[in-house]
Length: 462
Ligand code: BES
Ligand code: MN
Ligand code: MN
Image (tube, rainbow, N blue to C red; front, side, top):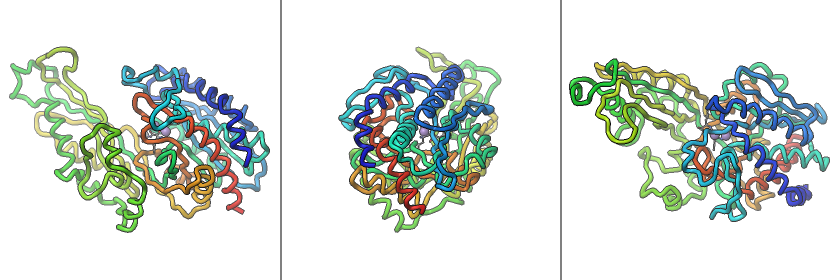
């Protein structure tokens, strides 16, 4: 493995340019206007896996966007690593807040990334992190150091709920058989302090619609005499948290796995500066559930957030109107033992019951998934930690993340294997936001660290 550093140095310009080409294709899964580009990206991923040295690569059609499957089986008696990633990206909007166009990647230096970072939608989430695995495979094949079998499964619907992937996994258990699943689609603490994600939150995502009168009304002629759906919706939403920022839905916390004080003390050891956190977001204070600190609020505690709210007149100037309807999109981040389908039901029941006479309410569930936790005494975790320790010079810290990759819990259920989350992004990389970027340092470090995971995983499996 001594050569991986040299190999990365020698080929880094090409590695960066190949990623830039992939980032130019706007594979936005949420918006059908980009459908052609999503399919094109799948073809590009397929070609890259073939070039990197997979023996077999195919585009698997699904009811939605295709899954790219590739493999290199060197000896069926050796362990198999299944690499998962996604080639779809979030919509780029609000586009006017980007300092350079989202699908015209450019390298810019930042305070946190003095060696430069690639600015483009998908650079960190997840094309850049997924492509590190393709380049790590290239190295292992070129240097004849691939120590086990490898399978790749790269999907195009992660950002919209992985529906087709669930369909695919249920139908292909034998094909996807593996000893460990490896994913780079999370983050780490900093470029000096690597971390391994040991938990992900679950998710329930719903849309609500409040209907009042059968048409928009003059707010003077009717104001005060009929329910205003926007007023009512605002009040209903506001009542979902109490004065301590606890969620008020009956039964919501029933199955929440509480951490012991010891576990919370262990968590508090991870380096974190509240001052820097506030400064990075231009906040004069943080906000959240009473009794928990910031790093607990965004990882081990469930939450409820409005992601979008609309209705009535939002154009230029003033229009006096009472809208017929008001809408909101609401996400609930869940923690282990909360069942997302049960939470969706509890929400629906409670939210509907909040409606006063004079309006009707509809709740439409979008998608969801279970949370995930993984132990730190598994071979996979140890191998990942050994790999990070070697390339960063310090051991990785286990961290539970607030984000969700719902398919990870499904992998465990259907494929009976654990997932190791080796993320190389930073929270400041602005995933899902304008000006998403991925550090060149992080990209190359990832390529350098991944082959070591394979090496140690196979050694520890013996
Ligand atoms: N890669 C992210 C999830 C993530 C990011 C986890 C950083 C931990 C750290 C993934 O692409 C994502 O955005 N997931 C969605 C859920 C999905 C069902 C739409 C999310 O967390 O909002
Ligand atoms: Mn992702
Ligand atoms: Mn994402």
